Length: 115
Image (cartoon, rainbow, N blue to C red; front, side):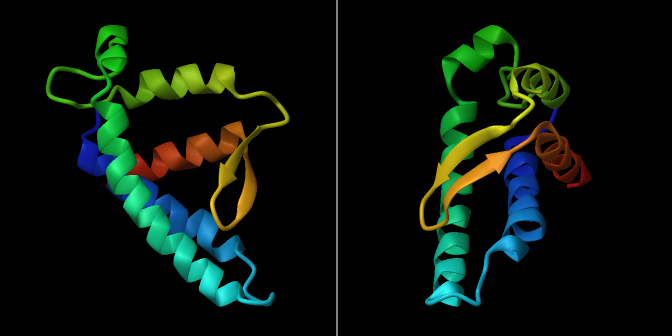
């Protein structure tokens, strides 16, 4: 089980280490876009994690306990089976579509566990 704080910190580390370095800055307004994305991502992590972790369905499914801690291994196992081989696309403000693969979810879990 991991806490909300661990999830938030792990997400922030993942964004800084895995996504931020790949944002092109050698395009018009590239550095500005990068700064705007990182600021928005920090806000979204804080707001989003707390919003979703408190969803009653996660408690009913056993993914979250009464204290709000998440079963990271259980969620990771479910995610492994749900991610198509070609990955899944997520529309990210400022950056556009990003494709995430099963190995990205594994990396994210590593960052969460490190905290």
